[in-house]
Length: 132
Image 1 (cartoon, rainbow, N blue to C red):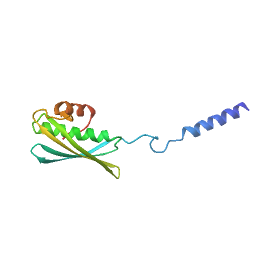
Image 2 (image 1 turned 90 degrees about the vertical axis):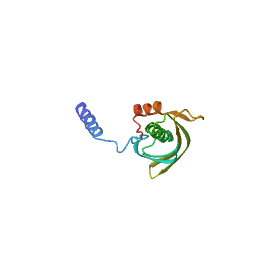
Image 3 (image 1 turned 30 degrees about the horizontal axis):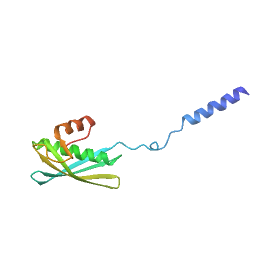
């Protein structure tokens, strides 16, 4: 009798061991992917950045990507600082887009939402977020 109970237990273990969960675990998301940056010069010091991502967890992911794009562009232009003016975010079919506008300048601009391009670009590199 004891051997039969052991056999049933082993059979149950084998059955459970063969089970594989289907799909991602509840609450898990695929990793974010950075799908590209478009820049458009609106004026000498006014730049529009359009960044696109999939697998976005929060709006902050898009804001960070746009900030990194602005920092990289600012450095390429030979400037040291940028100031955030606005960001519009929308999603369509799982693809998220941030449409952001920044001013770029050689000196620290007035305002609360300014960034030091070298510091931000270094942080972006450390976090693995692409820049221009």
